[in-house]
Image (tube, rainbow, N blue to C red; front, side, top):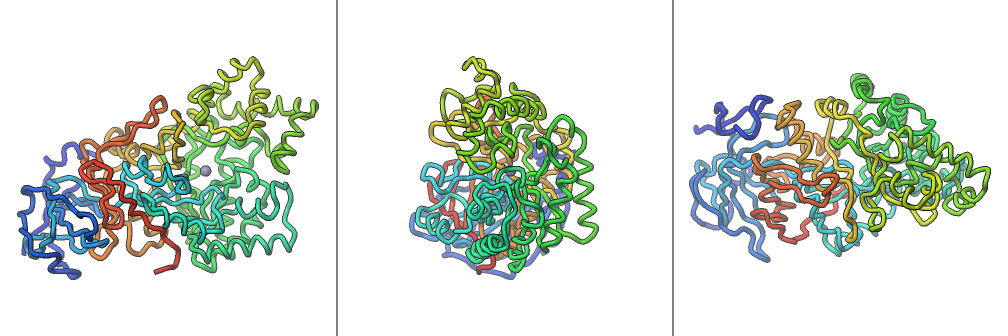
Length: 562
Ligand SMILES: [Zn+2]
């Protein structure tokens, strides 16, 4: 019996020197799924020639990738194999010569990495707008599935939304949570109060609607309004409804450390774990880190809380991006929640009141202090007069104080901003080594007139590999790929994604490990990542030979549906 060469990728073996690594042997797995596929074309020897054009229009995919260096999503060491795709499934992983596999097309990978397509556990890809439906900045990172409806914003009207996605075509797969904040706003508006029993029933019904229409669980954004106005007990009540569907509690928790008059970084983690535990939901902190200079060095304390919950038998996990900046709305960063209560009109009225304005003058500056001051707030708004400027600069331009500037800007609608240096690299690196840590972009689709945005939308996944695998050698490549694939699929209970295995759906990234890198920076954030040579979404080439095909092969993934 032949053997598959098997390579160890470790800290001392970056992808750059893979070719020099020692081959280990591994007994070849016999294909049990499909023996003979496609129609009799030449079977090319593994590791030799040739690139035939795959998937002509109208024909289902029938392609054999030969001599791939496979990281299968399990975290195991890489191995060399041939991988066949027929229609939308992986039909063979092994030695194609030995098993006489023939496909219509053969593409020799000659040691390129072949991995499962990446799963972005916290995404703000906007699939409701035509300009962003191809999701180009996400798929060029190797992402094939995005989790949306995070931060409490997911709509319970998922059937309508999904119908729209399916009619228009989307560039990647998508799945969603139903959002606590969305539901609360529908029932209570922006009121800062507890719901009545009747209102709570209405909220339960909306949660059920979202779950029935395919949500994977409930998300919350207790940092944001109106989520912040909710006690944990309210979220638990909705969580119990979601739990009837074997579901997830996804949270942007109340206080990542940068919350004004907040409950504190650790208490916030405790609260989220408690909500998950009391409602019988598995938990993900889908962008986990510690905010603010005061919490530099404190990631191990937060991670320890997750570890002890896991030791106690709870399924508690997290995801991360590896940037040091956050991005959200100017309002969330500069206006205390009491001043937002009741909605925009009441907020505007408070802004006009001289005594209230005086209090806000103080509190806005206190809030900014947590974030390092107004020079750390950078506009990432499509309006050209703000693009790339700091809050300090805009205030100076307008010849107003910072709090006055903030109130004037928010009065015209909300504004996208980043906080620079909110997260510490050491914290982030430490968290990357946790076995329960998945990966996300938290990226927002760029609007057509927008020059500045957070680079994470363009580079979140390759940056994690460039920085923590190649440069810092904090984690090995196989571990990093698992955090982007199999670990996420297991947590989401996706039975046929996240792994390179026979029978799985063919979401596949083929990557040149020597070239895989993010290119987007804070100064030039709209630069696509490099190094994804081919990308298959449900067996269709979304990227072929580094060219985006414009085939929108993404599918809606509904919870509990076949
Ligand atoms: Zn968030």
